[in-house]
Each structure stands twice: as structure tokens, then as C-alpha cells.
Length: 118
Image (cartoon, rainbow, N blue to C red):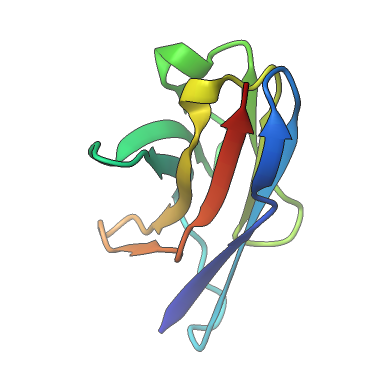
């Protein structure tokens, strides 16, 4: 099994910054996610893609976070970060990390809460 654990969420004022981290662990030896990403779900809304990054370093962002958020893969295998700057109230959500293998099998973390106050 594979586990993903997010950290770094919290309460921040609008205009502030947070850095989310996600690390994977598990019993599978030498696995590597082909894609890792961040998704978020605000109260009463569907989960949506925020940003993804392939193992080759190709990043993809939701339009609303372009220029404010930066996704990066860590040096350690199967880690991913999300640097969030210029946060807005509408960025408030639970943020989830997702890792996907080439086969299509994916794993989700438990989520970390981000609250942006006005």
C-alpha cells in the first residue's frame, strides 16, 4: 500500500503565503509516481485540480492560480510541494495531494485545510 501525507495548511490572511508539502511512503519498493498533483475542495463544491507535475518536470495549473502558485517535485522520491503566494479568500479549501502511476492507479492523501481570511 501507498500512503500520502500532506502538511503545511493553516490560517493565513489574504495576500499571505503558505507552502504545502506531500510525502509518500509505503511497502512498495522503488515506486515512483509519474504524476503528482494538488487538488482542492471548498465547502459545497466539487474537488478541482489546482496543479500537477510530471516526473519530467512538466507543470500544469488551474487558470485561477497561475502566477500565484508554484508546484515542485522534491529531491526525495515521491514528494511534491505547492508554494501558494498572494492567497485569496476564494483559495480557502481542503487541499489534497494525489500521486498517479503510469498504469493509472492513483492514491490520495487525507487533505490539509487552508483558510484564507479577509
